Length: 303
Image (cartoon, rainbow, N blue to C red; front, side, top):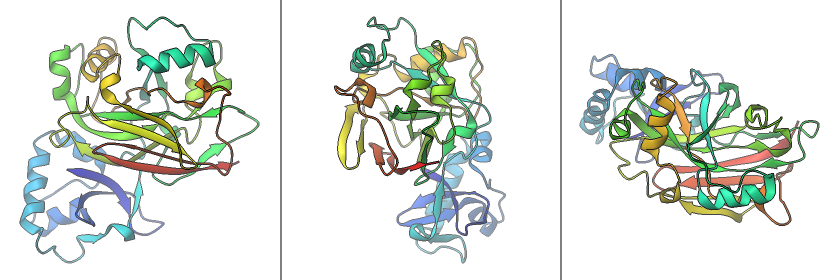
């Protein structure tokens, strides 16, 4: 299923919806039409666990031919927000997780040419999240090297503490798209959070595709353009550390909880790795997508 957080009017709170054909179906209202209590937010849905997905799917199929009044609206009338507008804790970012990106980072960012022996983990705070179409902020007082990174995002569905790789995939709720926006000139003595975690540096969406529907996450094309010019084009099969390894590794020291998000790293083609280097400026438009999930489009604006 393709789950979204949406609002119909500008002042509305974000609500949980499911995309069906060209419609957004409100999950809580759909449940109420059958006398059932269903969640109104994405985090509530994730908290219910994997049994909630079949229940929702059955409800959708029962009403697909004729929706109860007020339950479904055209997608064109809905404003999609980030699927989880505010995560409960920091996003787990993964650095240097594609071979060619390791090589280009060594050229452009003076990182090691050696392949990492373990996943490189950093974080982005919840305040970095923006939803589809919202502007990426360019603050010239903070950065002259604003860069792009398209990534597959993994959303955790149940607690994971010191789990094995064999168990890891069972802990996934679903998948989404994230842009790891980076201020390359804000890496402070090797500490990345200020480079990676400023406001608007985590565009996220447009939906979460549940794990039961997207069964081959390790073979998805992903791409990114700036002003219509292709900058990144690769496949998740080229990750150095695959998804089960990332989940198992993080869980060795930090419990992963429902609603946690892992941004799994970016392939080659970032601006800092180019010759000459290229960066984002006000007026630019960044577009990206991951196969089977969806696309994001974000303008870059001066603040």
